[in-house]
Image (cartoon, rainbow, N blue to C red):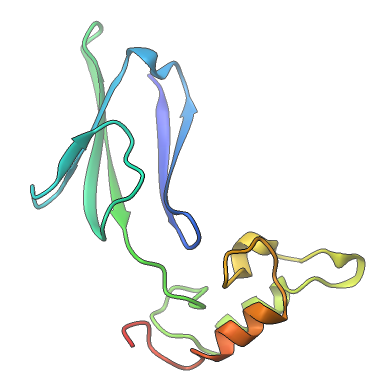
Length: 136
């Protein structure tokens, strides 16, 4: 049976990784838990909400279901606590390139403007929302 991993990312939205197995014989479908939305295959974009992805093989009778939560990322809330605070600033600073031009954390963690790099532009972007709750 193939496997997949679903994650909600800041720069890419819903990221669906087909982990292993042969997907050719499997039918993939998804549905929101409230029953309002559904579809077949892997979607490119989904609104915020809770979903269930199912994949089934009609020949073998095997099926699997994976729950997924899709939510907008909060710019600069690296620890996902609902606000941008000192802890988030420390994560951003740790993501800045040090000696040798490499970041301790990597650009995927602290890249506020999703350009693949952590630069002064990311610090300026972060400072414009510093200390604000994510709902603002």
